[in-house]
Image 1 (cartoon, rainbow, N blue to C red):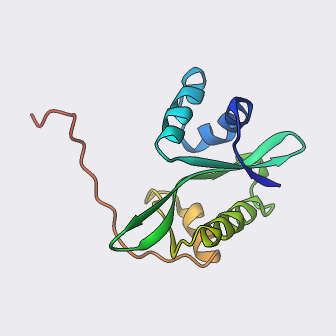
Image 2: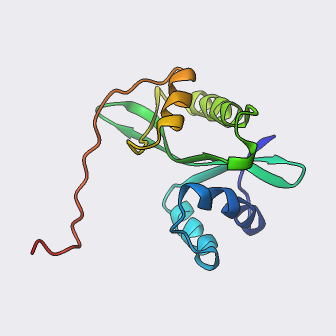
Length: 143
């Protein structure tokens, strides 16, 4: 069953799967980082199967001129040992219901260009590529 992360124990249960998507994460810092993000509007959902998180999603609700009210998925991952069992579909379907319940007109996410398997999944779920995402690191010197 998918549910919102409610407490520190839930946050810690999400680390093994979330670190598969974000391998730079450090377990001892994970809880504090998530709590800081939560204080800034981040939400996390988890799909627990018999006490083990098999999929997790970090997301935000927002509103902007381009999209109206939206749900933006920052992190979406299924445990690599549990893929192709419908867990990704289950958590994305839950996010879609959550978006509708919160009057969101759209769902958005960015996906690294190298993540071909993830892109296939998003296409199968009815998502489309609608833009390019550009970025710039502002803290590195330009030497």
